Length: 219
Length: 248
Ligand code: SF4
Ligand code: FES
Image (cartoon, chains in turn red, blue):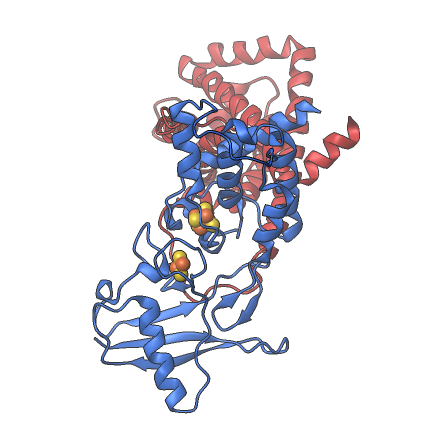
């Protein structure tokens, strides 16, 4: 069983399926994360109460954290494996190469990855552990978020990173269906629409929240 | 019509890394096909005592899959659903510069000029592109009932001529469209069932072995394919491979 799994993983299709499943898990977390954070609009009590409620379930929090770490690790590992292979699959490049169908999102997946990873590190140091936050106070989520986003360049970093994330999600959210073999002429045209909606909701919320603070709607 | 050709020239000498050469193609009738235009250029090169440009071709009617070059950045040229041999010079602009390059992929090494070695495709076919049959007297036609939708899709997949444009146009030089066409053609009909799950494993293994890249769902393959094989078939290939792992 273990050798069969390793053998499967050694193929490109195996790695892609691992990327698809882990990517889907990460994307579902991002959706939940973004929807939860919308409670910023409800004010300090609402958001801090939500955070306190989550932290009241340490088993759940740690299970999710470990699961995400595992998914992220496998996602990145597979991406590197595939990237290395694809880099060597065309040693002599074309003088002229024109594309007809591929999207900007599809071709920049591999660059979106490291940008999002760097942003993730920054984001955790900023809002979770507070090292790069000027006035971090544990448990005061609302105050931390508002103080963080008030700095215009911090908001800009969040907005830029989430644009990249939205592109990554757009290609990823229809790609996983194709990779896991879920395709049918009847509903294939809905796949990009679903992906755009998903990427739009997650990216949109994550860009909307810093804007809400920057524009002084929440202070 | 008149064209300026920038053609990739590379001798069979393994040390030769190749280069582009410029040729003027004048007095070309708009009704010549792309390959006929190359024939005319070649005749003039031979008259001059130069080496003619080597390129692959056979049927010249879009059914054999032998021809193919990347023309101005498009595999088989800019016209959709058309092999290079079926592309005509009237679809170019008079005086246009035309870049002509061989398929580029690690798995398709250049033999000379515009000819590449596509035996990697043959190895994939040898690995599983067959069915077991009872030999002897011919069976009755239509003796095995096949649902119409399956027959249609298998037929659509069977249109693949193995030209390699999918690999050539893919940003990752992946052969997934070709393999998915074969898997679909053979795996959808009853005659292909006995080997179905072994076939997908062995053909994918041969594809990996040959050094093709991994699919990133770009869709360039289906846009370049002269037989318009849809990339839905790649989802089917993925599905069959996943199922085959659960079978044994
Ligand atoms: S799938 Fe299309 S492009 Fe690829 S080998 Fe077959 S006919 Fe050529
Ligand atoms: S020469 Fe046969 S398909 Fe073009």
